[in-house]
Amino acid sequence: MTAPDTSLAALSVDTCIIGDDPGGHAVALALVAGGLSVVLVRIPATGRAGHDLARRLASLRDVDPAHGWAAAMRRISQAGRDAATREHPRRLAAAGIRVVEGEARFTSPRSLAAGGLAITARRFVLATGAAEAPSAWPDLPEGRVLTPEMIWDLADAPSSLAVIGADGTAAALAQAFRRFGTAVSLFATGGLLPGLHPDHSQALRDRLVADGIDLFEDAEVAAVEPDDAGLAVTATRGGDRDRLRVAHVLHVGDRLPRLDGLNLEAAGIARDGTGLRVDGGLRTTNRRVFGLGEAAGPSDPGLSLRQAPAMAGALLFGRTIGASDIIRVTAVPTRPALVEIGLSETQVRAKDRSARLLRLPLSDSAAPGAGPGHIALVVSGAGKVLGAGIVADNAEPLIGSLALAVGRQLSVQDLAAIQLPYPAVSDVIGKAIAPITAARLSNHWTRRIIRLVRMFG
Image 1 (cartoon, helix red, strand yellow):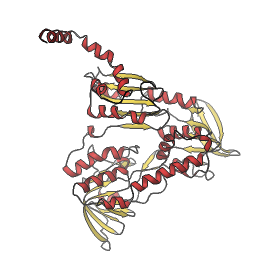
Image 2 (image 1 turned 135 degrees about the vertical axis):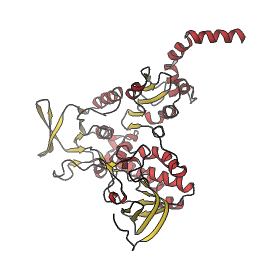
Image 3 (image 1 turned 60 degrees about the vertical axis):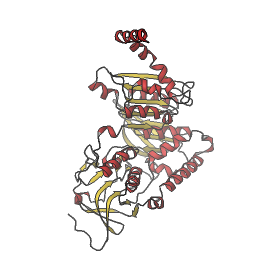
């Protein structure tokens, strides 16, 4: 164990939050509102997240690609500056949060050195987020092999690009570059969007191909080498080898938790693979320390904000964080966008053999702006909505009522009864469940109840 540095000024608080993940900010604000003393340690971070760029590029639906890459990036950079202003340290300090800038290092299970301070706290929350994985080919010509965070500095869209990756960020960036005239090949070895429902990934696969993206799901990238035109990507497919010449390669690898340099061993905090080892209540092996969001390993930029209310409740009121407090959400910022929330069909059927999947087609007349697409509901045998998915051009705002239904485990009838401006998603769901309602009304016992009501009504 590292001995405390007695030359540092001492600071004692109830909770110390380490990192600049948005979920950590939300927890800090809740704790201060509850009367607790909080210090937030902002660790210097390099680069800007590629997943954030992918989301912002997808949101620029009204941008004419003919205006060029530079114009789009100026708009995105301005939006980023606006967001940074909203999270400015002065705003956090004005709320009563002590903000400390600098590297952080645990010195004992209850103490941390950061920003010239020796901080002791009852509880610590690691909200360090994650960073893009480094390039798999660091020795190639500078600027030719890109990682997602390097795209922010491109002066123009490449003439041709090989995107290597299979997740939502890879798909969104491939589609974004194609919109700006880049010839794009996407190498999604092992399949596009692993872990998502096949119907959803197929809908996106069809759109990418229709957009003119060359999609390779059964090819393994064997080598990336310098070439007269820029780079050459060698891929193997079965026993065949193909060589593709491109100007640039974009490698979308795993996101890695920012945990290096924290001296976790001094605090008795164990790692599990790349992230923290946490239990179902988000506690690490040091019971005083919690792991929030991507610090615990899962690659999900929005996870910390979804965990924040449960984390704040645990720290303020001693509540136990349960599995139902944090719902799985996967969002792919392509066009059409793809969102999945809650349990999958496979997970529900493993416990409930009478569960079923309802697939509801969308149309512009039913949900303005949705475009072609569909809604999928995973419904238990008792009619409760336990999972949902949507594929639509305007999926994000349409998912709200579905998220409510999954979070509260409403029935499909409850979901259809949510009153929204017509036409809306609830209209689609109402039409789709009409046969289910009719089947229940035609049940023998239901018919008997109806007759009795009519006799005495």
